[in-house]
Image (cartoon, rainbow, N blue to C red):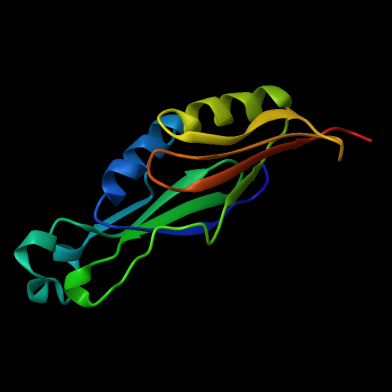
Length: 141
């Protein structure tokens, strides 16, 4: 799989999202840091103490998916929207199908995985956490 080093911001459900991604990619976190464990952690409101400050999950060959909980108590204003996609470029149709099917569970498909005019096997969806994905396998020329 090609590299995808992306940083995702969530409205308090980073841990749930990353536990889901961990299952899909069958890997383990390399970093999981909570706000309470930071040098300024005692200044964070109690309701946000266990939220995720930083999490890193290796996916594929040298790629890292990272994330955080955006805290309103810290003045963060997160808008879940359509401002990005994570694009996964796979090594085979089988890998594309597995990742597409697993990640899209509970979400909404916007373009079914299919052969395209640009000589790829491609699909798009929004997962159950509101993250938009593109999955692509480019056929050999």
